[in-house]
Length: 85
Ligand code: FES
Image 1: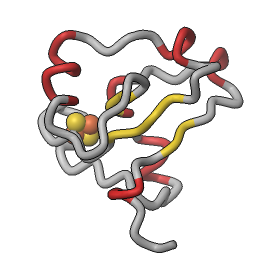
Image 2: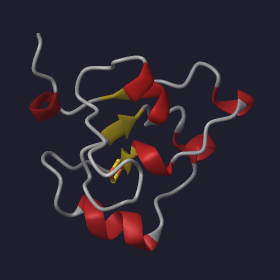
Image 3: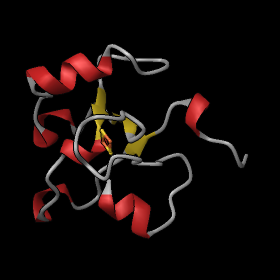
């Protein structure tokens, strides 16, 4: 989430700054990367119930810890979060 915000990625608002209260950082993890990003916690899953267009690979990007093992990670955004197309 932080990487998306500082690089002005359209569609990641992150209104709560990573406090796991807003779900405006919703994203989809590419199927080839879900194992490396890990699974959503129970608290994160509760928040994901309220996002638009949830999928099995939905995550809240603020809950993903990024390190070198995620170099090349592919993340997609729900259509409802992309405004400048
Ligand atoms: S930034 Fe608010 S839940 Fe992720």
